[in-house]
Image: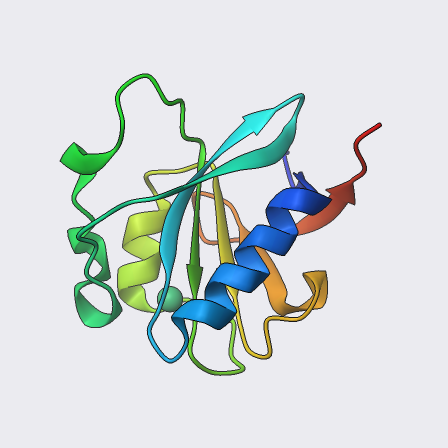
Length: 126
Ligand SMILES: [Zn+2]
């Protein structure tokens, strides 16, 4: 049903830049939306990625933030979610994976809660 998601250009740029900065480590953050577009990004301290991806410490998520999505980077050119990724995706309505070379929206894939690929579009702010 809800197979198209929107992201602001600012948020997208932040994600790409963060992924480049964290490389070769993975980068994980939570997302919240405004006006039906993903617009805010929250990097959660003490997150452990890779095989133990699901060990995101949700107690570290700031209170009062309505996170609806997640974003994490892959240190390669592959979008394919791992099994741990898919388990984690169940927690959020929108899940993004960003892959190398972390340059544009073409390097970002969106998945819904069930791990089904969804469209991601840039929503321009006026
Ligand atoms: Zn992953």
